[in-house]
Structure formats: C-alpha cells, structure tokens
Length: 420
Ligand code: GLC
Image (cartoon, rainbow, N blue to C red; front, side, top):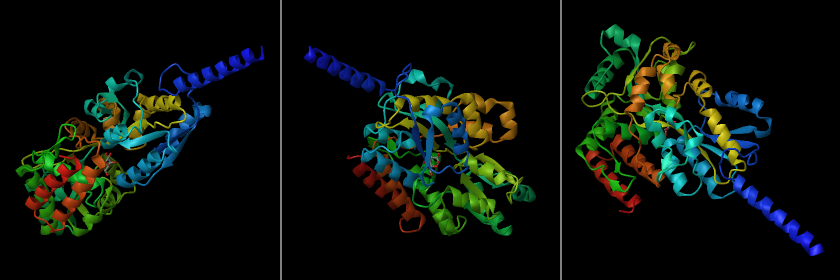
C-alpha cells in the first residue's frame, strides 16, 4: 500500500509542478502567478512614477511593485537591462522598454508574448501599437508615446515680429541672426552620441524625405539625396555656429537646461521639456512656444518615441505583471501620466479632452506629431544600427566627414550590421 501512497504523492507533486507551470503564462482568471514585482525603467525625469505606483501598492499589498530606476540615458538603461536579462538572474519582472527595443528583446527571447485581448489596444493612438509587436505577436503594451517638438522663445520672436519657423531655412535664418542679437545660442537638440543623436539624425533624414532601413530591417535605404540633405542640415549648423558646439554634449536634460536658463532660442525636445520649462519658477515661464519640427519645405517628421511595458521571460509573477500593465494603461492612470509626469499618454481620447487641452495647450500639436511620426528602423539588431548612426553622424557634425561621405559609410556599415 505504501507504494500507492508514494505514487499518489508523486502524482500530486507532478500536478503542483504542472499547475505552477501553467500559471506562469500571462493568462487571465488565474489567481496564482501573483505576487510582488520589480519594475525597471529609465530615469524618471519628472519624478512622478514612484508616487503613482504607491496607488497600486496600497490597493494590492500582496502584489507590491518595487521601482528600479536606471540612468536617464537610453543607452545606459539598455545596457543594464540587457545584461540583467542575458545572465538569466532576472532581477526585473516588468520592463519599461524604449519603443525601439521591442524587436530585439522579443527576438532574443527575453520578453513574453502577451494576449492582445487582455489590454485596451483599441483605445490607443494608432501608431503606438505597432511598436509593441514583433513577428505578428504582441510582446509589450504601449505605455507612453512621444514626439519631438520645436520649442521657441515666444517673447523674442514677438519682439522681432516674426512667426515661429516652419522650414529649415527660416529656422537657420532666425538662429543665425535673431539669436545673437538677444545674446542667445541658436538651435540645439540631443547631439551627444547616444540614442538621442540617432533620433535627431533620423528626424533630419525623414524630414527631408529619406529613410534608413526598409521593411523589418532587411534592406538598407539610407543612400539618398534626402539623407545627405538631412545630415547636411545638422553638420551645417555646427559649422556655421547656429548650433553651439556645447550642444554636441547634450542629452535631453542638458539641452532642456540650456533652454530653461534662457541661453537658447530654439530647442528640439520631447514635450516634457515644454512642461518643465513653462512651469512656475522656471526663468523662461510664460515665454515658451511649441510648434511641429520644421523640415526643408514645411513641417518635418518626428521620430516616434515613448516606451512599452514588457514582461520578462524570468518574471516571478507574470499574472501580477500583466495586471499592473492593465492598471498603468487604464484611463485614470494614463491621465496622471500626463498631468503628473508631463509624458504623452497612449490613450487617444485624452488628446481631445477640453480640460487637458486647457492645461496642456500643446496637446493638439503633439497628437498631430505622434500620428505623423515615423518609427525608428525596426531591427532585431537595433542597438547596432543605432551605434552606427551615432558614430557616423557625430563625424559629420564635428566636420570629420562630409555629409556625402557620411551617408556612404552609413550605407556600408548598416549593410554589415544587417548581414547583407
Ligand atoms: C525619449 C523617447 C525614447 C527615445 C529617447 C532618446 O525617452 O521617449 O523613445 O529613445 O528619448 O533619448
């Protein structure tokens, strides 16, 4: 009889293992797969996320989330996340990943596919959902979107009686003539070699009508007159001095600070910079305007920014991770992402809310910029693609390569990366 009892115990153990295994999927209706979580994110520049997560923690004491804030440079955050995911220790359960990392993380098997019907994807702005899919499957849920805007000094342009620029020629002219008259530098973006430079370079190329890679990264399309024109715009700025040399060391925060300290006429940045520089106590409060990024003959094209929430393959409590994602993308929380975090929400309806538009007058411009924004090249080797773009564009901006040579080198090195 003893062996029957032992076999029974064995069967029970097997069943526990199997149920435990099933519960590790991200399915609804399970009450196992729940427990505490860690959420890793890039630097929270407006400091809103910790307090926001306290709301979840109060209501879900058994599924408490601990925030792990990584550096504010996208590249350093990428390095820390991938190191953690690669060594399989899995310190992070939920990852707030840059929109352009989804393919790489999914292809590497670091994040899990998610069931579409568990998340309100139909309520999101259209282009953001695409950034969360890979190979036809959903691997993350859009959380924050982003589009570049041109911030300008309203007071200075009003004094000169000129409207904000719509074309590169107008921007260059004002940056070269009006800025120095008012003791200001002309134009800056994020020009340090890191993801921000890739974004600024891609925007210049896209605005001129060019592209970098085609399809899912399998073709290289950068060798064009448009790419030369885009990179030429940035290189000319430094050479002619309307982009100050110090901007070659700017990330988002440094460039925002230069504008906030009243040292810049024009700044390309994400909308959070508009909110922070316009806030009470900022030296330029009340003097900040925002328009779409200019291009060669009219409004240009922004790169689609933002981040998606993904569940690590090693997540200890995947069901709780999915429940937290649903919470963070719910309407009331998305509203707080905007009102407290100054970050662009992914829920479309919020962009048409009259109260929010009163509070954040740039919302209609931002909505338009997000809807027309172009994604960065999709590639499972996106990190390599970005490093190539940064290095080559850096050389063009420091005068070590002509825009022609830069584009030729880009075409060659990108072909090497994608193995063509
Ligand atoms: C912002 C954007 C992100 C981008 C990064 C570049 O965080 O949301 O998509 O990659 O800036 O610095």
